[in-house]
Structure formats: structure tokens, C-alpha cells
Length: 441
Image 1 (cartoon, rainbow, N blue to C red):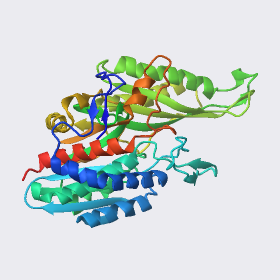
Image 2: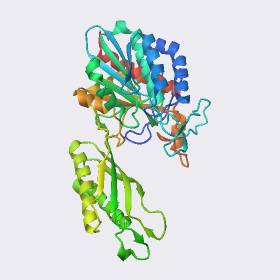
Image 3: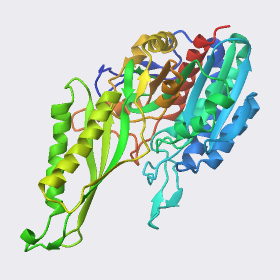
Image 4: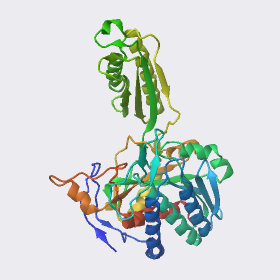
């Protein structure tokens, strides 16, 4: 089996280790199973990669997962919360472990040059065409879910309990988890005692995994703000109420929420990602619209940020004598923060270190990115973990950090391309071994 060797920068962007994917204290049965089944799983991955489906449209992907679950002996239910798939495998008394993979792609035109690159396109609401791509690795997640579910079914003589395997739609919209729960995920199916998932990482070598104890992903809110003015001629600003100037003041003042209302030790982000107002050089418009992304970890900080945005918007409009109050709306696509249970993380570190070698198990800093996987453990009040799965050729990772090296594509990039075989092997080994640890015979 192939061995990768590189350097490790703990807590840094680069995360490369000596990644011997034959593993440190390999489970001989699992290794033999992978030797036999991995080629087929790599083909499954390439097929999923070549045929991505956007959020809320994952019909064919769901059908493929359902077929795989059925053939492995799971009791399968489709159409849960949209195109969600639930596979249940009961195997005697014991805990219930939920394992999850997400299935949706992104509206990105692929530029990897891979032989199995996506050529799928889609129409936006405005009629323009966009590509569709698995630019966030959900094809790896789905294939890993299939592979782990298949192996655990084949190895059911080694564990006792229940596995609930879910293929979740619409993660990129932050709506899939809440839709599945709203459709009775924890009432119609066994209630989990643990929740487990992984996510590919574009700055870690294939053959390695990363962990974060405590908060690992942020609360994510989308906020729309409209500031109203009274338009007119750009040469006669004194006869108008200029919403552009008011909006500029508002954007500047927003930064004082993080710098002056939030404890400096509490992570928080407010970013104005979009601003639109006016159509001509010499015309002051009647309104300006803005789109904000708001990130936090704790609920109190989240409330401070959201209430502060509203207060500053209202205060700005009073200062500039706007003809009516601002519109401030928080979209219902809220994604709660992901919390990795520290005890479960310690268990995972031990299991992963045994399987991969401790040098390939790397502590990672928390991310301000969002992931709706956190809803499951949060709703249930049970331990959960989402760990990071290295996906990049270690040589390419090393070269990217050399003087004059070209930075590697990040997740959501049109050029992001995980290395399938070692990535899937490591994902299936770690997820399967962790589930076996939680469901002892």
C-alpha cells in the first residue's frame, strides 16, 4: 500500500503527516475488506462526482444510496425531509449510533480537468446557466457513508446495537438537518445515543484526520438589511436623503459590535457580502439593500450580534433622517454551531491513533464555517463529533507551501479535487472503527 510522507504544522493551515494508509495497528478484517471493496467504492465516488445534484434536487443520489443500503441489509426509508435517506440496521441490544453523509452539490462550474469531471449544468432563477459541482466533497462524504455502512453490516458479528445511517440533503442551504428532523427523524427511527460525521479538508493530506474538541463550526445567520432614502439628482444632494451615505456609515459602525460589544475571547464575525443601490452615476437612489453573514459560537454572542445589527440600522436611519425605518430580517436558514463532545473526541483520538498512527491524527483550530450536522446532537442532547478528513496529495500540499508555490484550491473552489483512494480508505477506516468502539459486542 502507498505511503505518503510530509511535515506537520499543528494548528497551522498546512496539515501533512506521515500518512501510511496501511495504518498503524490495522484491523485485518477491515483492511482485507477494503482491499476487495475499495475499487468499487472509488468507481461509485467518480460516478457521484460526475453527476452532482444541487440542494433539494438530490433525487438520483438518494436512489443510489438507498439501493446500497438495501443491498447491505438495512431497513431503508426514502423521502425523509425531501431527498433524505435513512438506513437502520438493528443488531441486538446496545447503543444507537447515527452516521451521516450529505449529498448536495454546489452551483460551481468545474475546472479540475479530471476525466470524471462534472459537466452538469443548471439554470438559475434569472435564466443564466451555471455549472454544478461537488466542490465541497459531499461526494466523498456520501461514498464514505456507503462504504462504512456496508462494512459494518458485513462485520455485524463484531458489534451489538443499532446503526442509523442517514444521507442528508440540502446541507449547503443549512436546511437538510432541520427538514429531516421535522419529518420525524427521531420519532420514526431509533433515537441515537451518539452522532458521527466527517468532512473533507482541503489543507490536510490524504491519510490524515483532524479533530477539534468543543466548538468546531460556527452559528451562521444570513441577515438582509434595506435602508430607505429619498432619491434625487446627484448634483443636488441637499434635496435628498442619501441611502448610500447612510449605508456606508452603517457598515462602518457594524464593526464596533464585534470590537466593543463582544468579549475579545469570543469569536464573532459580521461581513457585508453584498450591497446594491442605484443604477446611474448622477442619480441618488431611493434605497440600498445589503446581505450580511453573521458568525458566532455561543447563543448569547449570537443574540448580541443580531440585536446590535438591528439597533445600529435603526440608529443610522434616525441620524440620517431617513423617511422610514430600515428593514432588517434574519433569514430562517440559521445553522447552529457544531459542538464536538470532549469525551467523544478523546475516544476518537485513541481509536484514530490506533488505526492511523498518532502522528496522522492532528488537532485543528475551530472554524467559523457552518455545518448543519450540529443540529442532531444539539436537539438530542447527546455526544456528537464531526472530524476532518485529509483529502490532498501530500506532495502537492508540500509544494504549495514552498517559496513561490501556488496555493491549493479551497473547498467550494472550481478546482478542488480530493485524491479518492487514500481519502476514502482513511474515512472508512476511521468511521467504521469509531462506530465499532461505540458498539462493543
